[in-house]
Length: 72
Image 1 (cartoon, one colour):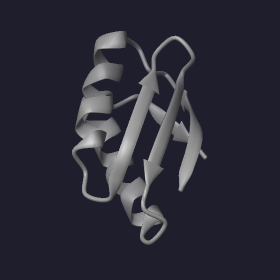
Image 2 (cartoon, rainbow, N blue to C red):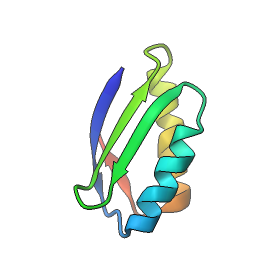
Image 3 (cartoon, rainbow, N blue to C red):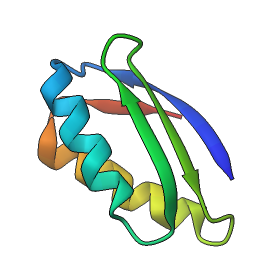
Image 4 (spheres, helix red, strand yellow):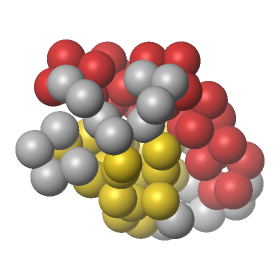
């Protein structure tokens, strides 16, 4: 399943790159991209457990950029 999300308060391109790298390493994630300029994130992950994967994605984002919110 591939889904796009809008991000709010992503402050720098370096943080976006760190998020992207960390998300790609999560189990069940096939691919991920985080765009600082567009303030968007695309997640391609397994259909089964997608909601659980997104919880882990949110945790990664909070560690890298505590003010950043994923708008679903």
